[in-house]
Length: 251
Image 1 (cartoon, rainbow, N blue to C red):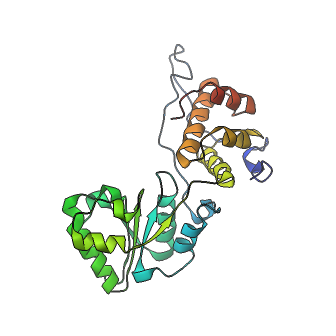
Image 2: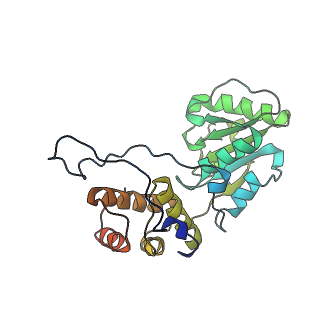
Image 3: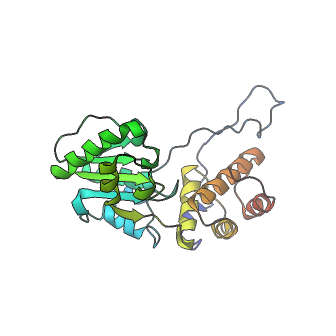
């Protein structure tokens, strides 16, 4: 992805929207002391998901209307790889209900429902029976079950034999490590979510300096955001070069 393709992020006639503005009646406090890490809104619409070779299969299985064998699918990828984003897209398409594996309710949905259970690696042993009954209910009534995790079903540590066999028989689709194009798109989205508009050349520079992962992209943008706030200046190529070359922690 070129800077020209993402030039909307660097347009000089786009003023930065108001973000976390440091305000105080005590002049002794500087901008760095007043840069708070507020929770930032994240855009999770279908139009916000950038499809590349590394996630195209997962996107097609979830957003492309493809049939899932037995109506169930395991979406596997590292933290920050887009699992929650794809679940939200699937919700919008199917009206699915999201459930957290850590607090899995034993209540069964209506026949034929669509259910997403997230973070299966954290499923408590006492909730295995609830997942077993949920699985059988959805499969037998023509429902759909989307399971997400950072690891494949065989590594979820399920103790209940009948559930373990059913989970391991689930079709798995993976979110692979991002390719170069996706890394730049991830950086662009992270900057946009923070209402930052980096100067030309920043995306390509940062993409070449960081590990090729979703977490590294998020960490680099967070680091540059803090530097931009503390210095009261936009994210320029000079700032990015200085901050990233200094070895400042990226999270």
